[in-house]
Image 1 (tube, one colour):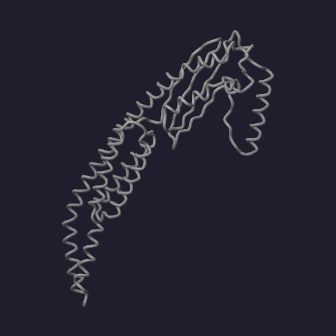
Image 2 (tube, helix red, strand yellow; image 1 turned 135 degrees about the vertical axis):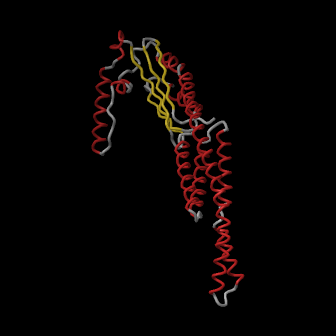
Image 3 (cartoon, rainbow, N blue to C red; image 1 turned 135 degrees about the horizontal axis):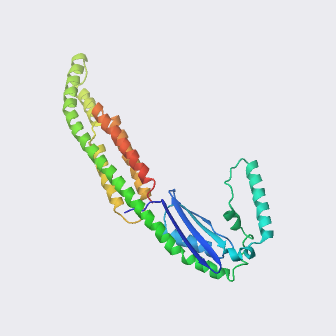
Length: 295
């Protein structure tokens, strides 16, 4: 079953007079975009976290944050008041520049400010490297929870897409029946039109007229479109049964589905067939919305 690009997980821990909360969120994206918000005085945490996330996900916009807080008893020792003043001044400068450029920024929280360099510089930690190592120990479990949620979401997406594929197959079946019924009427109409043309066209080449009418019949034939729709349904089912990222392939397949539905509508020459074509387009559009979240 495919994975969804949507997921969420959180984990918390404590060591060396500090406590922390990991927060991991993912939404759909064209490629893999990993954004981190990790205190930069914890050397080595960000590259290690990025590497682990890159190994666990192939697509999606992913945000990973680590919020660190000092235990209340020792909180004062961990706060560098000079660094805090510098951080606040930097924030004011950034916000002023953004306002002048017409860029809207979200409000900064106390947690954001504490994560800035120099505000909590690690002075209150006996060993920042040990703290970083302790926090990183929670990361595999966090990613496992995140992947499990993506798996559950992916299973739900696959079930929804399979249901839409069943609907597409049913509509293609209806189109085949309607096209078969239309074929007899078309043959009779063509014969009547041929007779009328020949009766009112002195000197017309009967063979040439017959060829033109036959060409019109070929152009209105829907067999190829319906065969391709059946093939696309089989291909989509095959992709959903695969392991690994299949979202890009499914997205391309949705374009092919839509192309055949559009052609069916343009060649319908029948209110009933047009209705089926429009129903197909509706189902395909619903399916495409689901596919947008598949990794």
